[in-house]
Length: 588
Ligand code: AMP
Image 1 (spheres, rainbow, N blue to C red):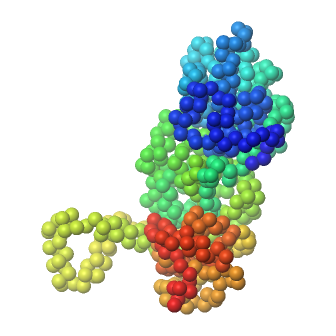
Image 2 (cartoon, rainbow, N blue to C red; image 1 turned 30 degrees about the horizontal axis):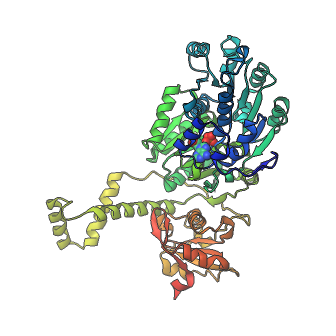
Image 3 (cartoon, rainbow, N blue to C red; image 1 turned 135 degrees about the vertical axis):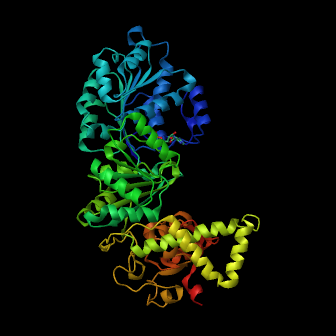
């Protein structure tokens, strides 16, 4: 985090803020234990009346960072405001109605103990009730710029007594062409107001806007990694190289292996949204399109289905997905590489919130590889590049799924749980046939009942060459799609061990992991498990080789003992427990 605020003692508790009892009580009730970094940095300067320019994305706690001081200043001035300055105290401009509603909910929540009157106003809703509510008197208005202008022109929104103006997600508002509206609105407010500008990115246009409308602002910048102190969100970033014309087919394969619980799939155009939704649905994945043209109610229903788990993939354009706030999103998937690195950062800002792990997946045509490097520079985080999973990878994953479903059944099948007639039938068959044959026939029946897997189009393999030193490299034996490239299939641990792997690089030791391709394990899963549980960083981890039933991973010799200590009880990989030990121990 960087800031130009005068040095002050570090704020580590909400008690350190001079906030009203009612606000403190609400914070306790909400279970916030300590201020997030943006709150620690912004709240006191804002209480003192400074302007503020904050670079912070959604999920950093920025809403409370501006809302708590606004509510406190409102409480302080209650009853003292001169007659002519009664009216709207605080105005927050937000790019979309979803965000406006969300901020309004936050204002209500934080201001619950103060009896504050708040109102969200946005386009697409009848203006009459909004005018009516404004006439009755409102302290805090959260508005989209277009509707704010409309209400100002109709005399409903009076800003001549405004004390605080907040521009939330200013870069989004500028991208949507609201710059003139914002200027008109700010020009209708007193020069004495306090102005706060939050933006996830700081392009030149934002700096210019800030120069025109903010007075000697305190600047605060929160890098994404610092979001929640002590509770760093993890966004695993994977990219798959694929020729452009095969993107949709490749996406189907990746999602079938990845099986996200709750994902947004971003597409460039509306036509792509329809084609991708159809293709994913055809694969048996539960996908739904989200269009900008849908009415509010319809959008809300689709989002609700994702929240409740009835659908698992929302396919949308950037515009349609704007302002969506789905707290349990596990994946952000880019069917197309976003236009700018900033747009990428915006998209992936939707996962990895509140300390949860999130996954970002991007399908990249070779001509767009360079944009990944730009994103890595912007975020300071590396992106793992891999080839698209092969047909054999898919088969192995399906088989692993069948096995895990069978294991579930075996765990619950008891003498009492199954019909007597079924036992009698099995016993009869087992007398006449080898029980393995009986089981194989039963599996075939189950697979036939589940329907044939989709016909797979051939996807040319693009090797993820030129791995940067920070990311791990994949050995030939461990790359995805070995069969498609004519490499011999690996059969089992015995063969794999003899496959000429050579000694580990000097200064590193190879660890054996007891799960491999058959369980759907990919290099990034191993990096994730090691980084999560042993404290190694992605850049500490060397070559990873994925074999049919095990994997080998190089780690620095100096870290081996602590990794093995941390992972004594094994680690979870693709939903199963896997053990980790020195490769030497395995061989002896
Ligand atoms: P925001 O970045 O404002 O959208 O906030 C993201 C989420 O963090 C919201 O669900 C807030 O309720 C939550 N939040 C804000 N401040 C804190 C805090 N200090 N501790 C824990 N959660 C917080």
